Amino acid sequence: MGIKSISRWKTDAFAWLLLLPSLLFLLLFTFYPIAKTIRLSFYQADLASPEPIFVGLGNYSALFADEVFAKVMTNNLFFALGTVPTSMALAMLMAIFANKAMRGTSLMRTAFFYPTMIPMIAVANIWLFIYTPKYGLLSRAMTSLGMGEIHWLGSPDYVMWAMIAMMIWKEAGYFMIFYLAGLQNISPDLYESAQVDGVGRWTVFRKITFPLLMPTTLFVSIVALTNSFKLVDHLLVMTKGGPNNSSNLLLYYIYETAFGFWDQGMASTLTVVMIAVLLLFAALNFFGLDKKIHYN
Image 1 (tube, rainbow, N blue to C red):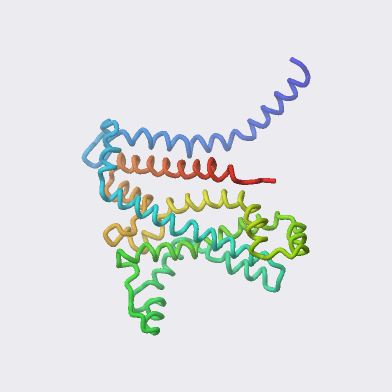
Image 2: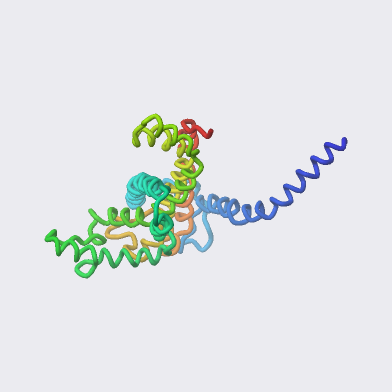
């Protein structure tokens, strides 16, 4: 073995030793629980079963025949469609506005980002007060304008819209930080050249800003889609999935199945479905959107 080979082997070994603690944590707290969850999804493990009973794909067939599961998935897809594009578009506009050299920029960025720093439980309580009938801020404002009163959290027609509005307010500032970082990596020379040539603002955004922000958009879209399927705190405080499962989302349904009905087998099946959906969305983003991105 040559000197170069020995040196390279030592470098690789040292790199793997540095990665070893992270790999161990990844195996113990990510891959092992996923493997256990997949295994448990093939068993009946509820209060009626002292010991788990192997049922094969029985949980999956029962799940896809479940009307509540169909309702929950429809709710979650609607929630994702309502929150992801809107919060991303708003975050991009906020970042463009906050990126300008003007007085009060730091204060503006703090104001935009502030909702992100509030814990989800606190946010849920704030918006619960806003949506409360008769006494809530929104009800009082609508009554003073002569618009009548809407029971936002008690109506199947409005409850999801109320949840969507709250989450856009909560998440737009978080996504703004990523877009702001992306904007600051764009060379100012491009904008100066466009200004010298007399190019309009909309054309500058369409031809320069938006294409160069596409790598950021890819990352933000994956984070936003993942967040739309892993939210549960606000439902515990505000609706508990009601009325009549109109605001129930997949993660809350998993929590309810596991710790409300104590059906570990079905909860594991639901978890596997959620992981599969998130992997599908990530793959579609990477293999679809990534081909249209220019990183240079």
